[in-house]
Each structure stands twice: as C-alpha cells, then as structure tokens.
Length: 239
Image 1 (cartoon, rainbow, N blue to C red):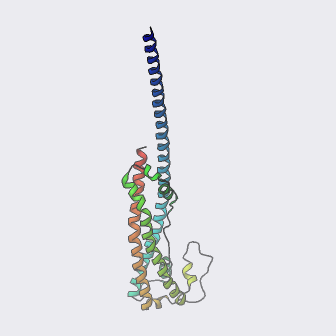
Image 2 (cartoon, rainbow, N blue to C red; image 1 turned 30 degrees about the vertical axis):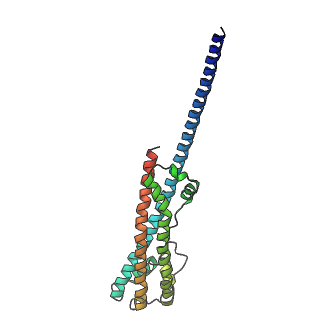
Image 3 (cartoon, rainbow, N blue to C red; image 1 turned 180 degrees about the horizontal axis):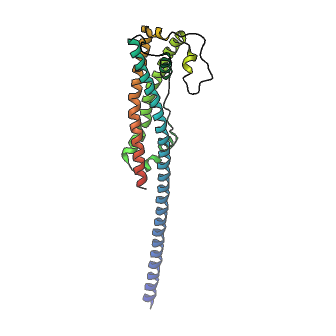
C-alpha cells in the first residue's frame, strides 16, 4: 500500500512537472510569435519609410541632373558661337544661353531614415544583402558627387564676375521664370564682344568640363537610387 502511494505521488509529481514544462514551452512560443510579429512590423515600416525617402531623393536627383544638363548643353552652344564670333545667333538666344549656363544646383538627399536605421541597427532587418551594401555605401557616393558639384558651382563665380563687367545682368535675369521683378536694362550689352575674348572661352571651357564631371558622378548615382527602389519593392513583396 505504501508503494502504491509512492507511485501515485511520483506520477502526480511527474504530471506537475510536465504541465509546467508545457506551460513554459507555450509561453516561449507565444513570446516568439510576438517577437516575430514585432520584427515583421518594424521591417515593414523601415521598408516603407526608406522607399518614401529614396523616391523623394530620385525626384530631386532627376531635377538636379536636368539643370546640370542644361548648363552643359548651353556651354557647348556658347563654345560653338565663340568659334564663329557669335554669328548666326540672336540677342535673345544669347541671353537665354547665358541664363541657362548660370544654374548651380546641388543634390542634397534626405537621409533621416537611412541614418536612423544604421545607428539603431534596424538596417539588418532587411533581407537582401545587396540592398544593405548599397545603403551602407550611399553616403560615400553622395559625398563624391557633392565634391564635383561644389567645384563646378564655385567655378561659375569666375564667369559671373566676368559677365558683370561685360553684359547687363538684368537682361539675362529676365529669362528666369520668376522674372525677379527686373526690367530690361537701358544700357547696351555687347554680347558679340565676349565671343571674341579668349578669357571667356577659357571660362566656358572649364564650365563645360566641370559640369561633365558632375554628370559623370550623378548619372551612376541615379542608377543606384533606382536600384535601391527596385530592391525595396522586392523586399516589400517578401513581407
């Protein structure tokens, strides 16, 4: 009879232990499920926020490239006119070319979401390794492009100073869509004179060269931006 009681107590104790173990396992499963759900939600927010940020960056980048392309094209046209002393052009075209050549745009991307995800480590929630490599290298690529933009923009100071001494700036500014509220100057500008000046040719040659360097940096950056958006789209599809 004592043996039966001992056996009963032992079975009861084993049952209690099994219930406790099962309870612990269930709790672990529940906690794991909650953790996985929280990570999935954080991952989804990160992907969506990064996509929004890079979509805005691409819009800005397209605009910046557009205006640098105008600078480049207008510079080439000005060099063509220098070769023929301005013949075959009109005063209105020259003013337009001078205005388009004056653009000084820079790409200043949004990086709040990216910087936060890197500092917090949330960037490692992303599944695509190629995407993470691009995001980690993005800032360096932007800085490389910025150096070329800053050099090109600073170089224009020489052209601006030259034009201030040779043409009426108000006439050029009239080609800005905003108009700046300026009117055509009563003083005459001898636009054809600058096309016979070697100093101006050198200034425009440098302008074209530096702008070409800018475009060489910005075009691959745009391609990289588009690739990031594509990979983020794929990451969304894996949610």
